[in-house]
Picture 1: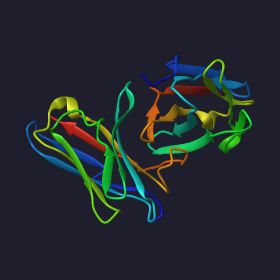
Picture 2: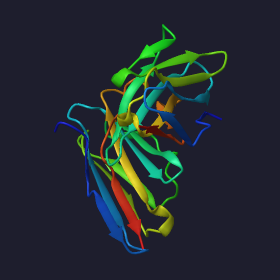
Picture 3: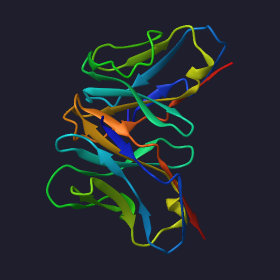
Amino acid sequence: GAGVSQSPSNKVTEKGKDVELRCDPISGHTALYWYRQSLGQGLEFLIYFQGNSAPDKSGLPSDRFSAERTGGSVSTLTIQRTQQEDSAVYLCASSLGSGGHEKLFFGSGTQLSVL
Amino acid sequence: AQSVAQPEDQVNVAEGNPLTVKCTYSVSGNPYLFWYVQYPNRGLQFLLKYITGDNLVKGSYGFEAEFNKSQTSFHLKKPSALVSDSALYFCAVTYGNNRLAFGKGNQVVVIP
């Protein structure tokens, strides 16, 4: 596609439920990133993929969070047993490479609301 | 610890006046520095980056930023602000494992 696509755009769930957030990166982009944006907190790094492997998972806030990437393309961020503090906008970004100097292309995000 | 500081929560500027958004960083080694902008109801967009070379880098929409190694700063500037520049601006720095760390963001309000 022309840009990074995230789905759903909005997700409302009940506390304790599991949710899956999907990211379709730009075709040919080998690096994929997940960030979380909370009001007044800026962007919090969650995880980064190079191809299908995740060299850096240290940003995941707890073991309730996991992510995978298949075929070097689509990525899914899963949050198990959601808590109210998980409410935020989850942003996905991709880049052509992972040299650190590449610019990131961001999706529009998934607004997650945990009631 | 690696960090990015954007000391002002909000920057108010009159249309036509110069705009400056401040950023300082604390990263070991030689950093890669970026500015991104988030317009209302839209995703983050790349504005400009500093990798190496000339300390003054020019980016999209007339913005520029100056890398100052001694002051560990990378302030964003625009000579004449437009109302359409009102947005949320993020400074970011790459460090170790190619992680991009973002500042909290600055809300810029350009007053007509």
